Length: 383
Image (cartoon, rainbow, N blue to C red; front, side, top):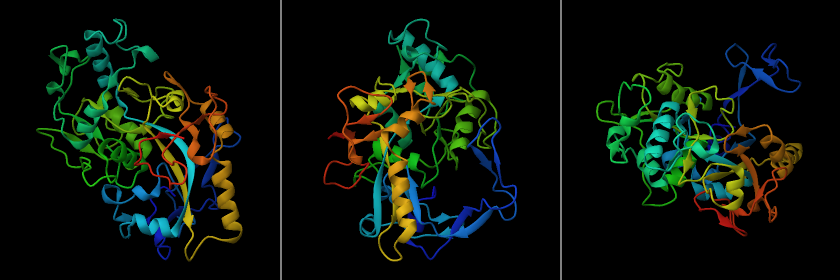
């Protein structure tokens, strides 16, 4: 379930699911023996049903406040209450996934040029895809971006000059653009938690939602991960495949987990945060704290999951999040900053080795210290 935890708390209401029994709905991908593509556009492709299990990239207790979406598939749901979730839901830690704040490729190039001018990157780095040439942004600056407090890139200075003077290609606007995600998206919830402390603290900030095309920032909210990629790509390439680009060529900041765009299909790139690359190994060492711990959730209150469905849920939650499986997945994800995006954690009960093992990735850092519930509001602690 990728539409939040609210349907688990109101099981009398139905949402849309694929009915893969529909003739011709799913087709084996060319060259693959186990990967399928399924359509959802034709009659009979979708059915109405209540979910048995939820899967999120964060814990479900975050899915309120700025992470609350009022309607799912046109059905209204109440705002989930964290205390009620603790009583009614069984939540199982599903391991870590590395998060990042990628930028449009044209912004990446400008940041490289600006940081070359400051002596932070080597002179050959503009356009270079190597680890040593990945530019960095500070967490404090990104926090202001996601709060809507950075309006124009010309107001951001490097080596005494506006960042826009380092542009490698002309811009149609210097207004800051943010490709955020829709309310209820796990990646947006991770941004809200890590950067804004929302809904983790009563003093947490509110993520920017409203666009100001004249003064900045411009804020758009793709509803799917691929649309997020297209959003960043559009602002760099001056296209509109996402349907969200009314600005032309601009600089944009987004939010994605790090397993995507490994073939550089889209014009966006991941960045370092506070000088640290978003690698699985840096999560292992504790140097890159921006990872979220995912969760499986199912009802433990009536109508609670039971019988074979409960056995299956526990089997999936256990077998789908092992260090060996994450190691195998990571081996297929090659990025300039290293392989992979997934790592098992001490919060799952695993013991991390003294030396990082990419085949069995486990970090001693976790958002679920011993004796506590999974809580992505916690800054990762060493177990």
